[in-house]
View 1 (spheres, rainbow, N blue to C red):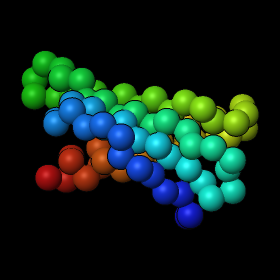
View 2: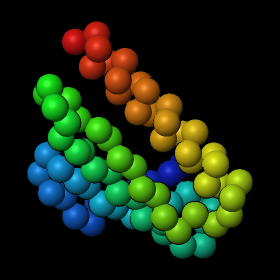
View 3: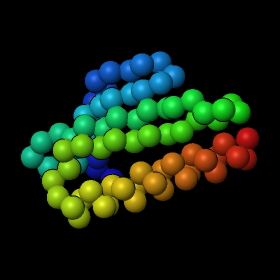
Length: 79
């Protein structure tokens, strides 16, 4: 899809922070993915994507990241 990222920081098993960019964008955005432990050997995935240009782009990525999380959940449920 043309997007690319550059890893900036990793906190093992907790968080990854990276620059995220579409080749047509003027500047990087910041993508942070965090795993928050929950009871019962579960985790909550928190995605924070900042620096997006406008409301339309924010909504596009909100849907994109929701789909990605749903895909991860499906894979984990299958074992």
